[in-house]
Image (cartoon, rainbow, N blue to C red):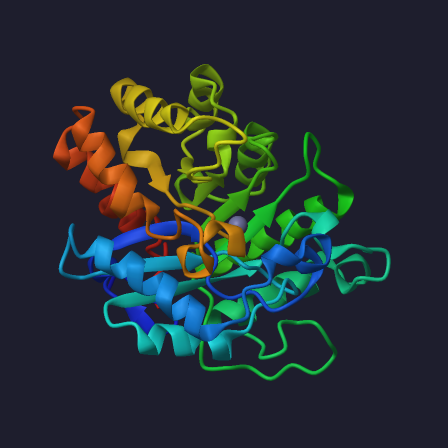
Length: 329
Ligand SMILES: [Zn+2]
């Protein structure tokens, strides 16, 4: 039976409802918080509040509510016990948790990191165990591993601005092995939309089926020709970074959805918001948050003349298909 892997277990993909394909509800410490303290998302009550807004907006589109894909990867502040509490407390919410890795700079100092010391195969084993056995209570931050009953349902890989470092390439090689072995989808982080094509080509060359890969944050490179070159490899694109007006107007994202849809790629586009800072969440006082896709993007696209069926694909159906494992349990 087809399934997506959430914190609750394996569920029928159509129960996911509206899917926010890249976001953050809980992050407790680690490198990003050291780089910018606004990344700290340790408050379960605030996460419950933020997720509740998302589910309320999602219910305008489907009675199933919504799913947040929490893209915090290994050793970046995952706290599955807190995150599971959020899922339990919000009716109509499901959560898919990421394994895999962030870009090298987030780990601050990587000569001594276990990724630099272990073999690719050993790193792949750890990713596979997150997916098939349960995520480490300690987020693979220390030598003791205690697996929780919550399994990962997506693998993150990430690259630097304009380059793929040796550390990142090793993480990608291990992630590719884990994706092929488990059938788990890969969702990526590009830095400001750079290296999207290189990520796709590298993972495909490592044997990952193209349609098991989504290239993420790629909206930052609001260049339709370039995005089309990535889509021609057969991968999905994941567009998020909503209401980040310091980088580009929202009209760029809407244009990407319109023009890529018209070019025939509308089945391989995913929406997220990547509201991974306190300053990007309503629960902490921001004007926009995790609910942006169903609350603002969907209504706006309808207002701008998009077909409702296409908007529903973008909000729900493309992601329900993408987050389905490529192998039976
Ligand atoms: Zn993120």
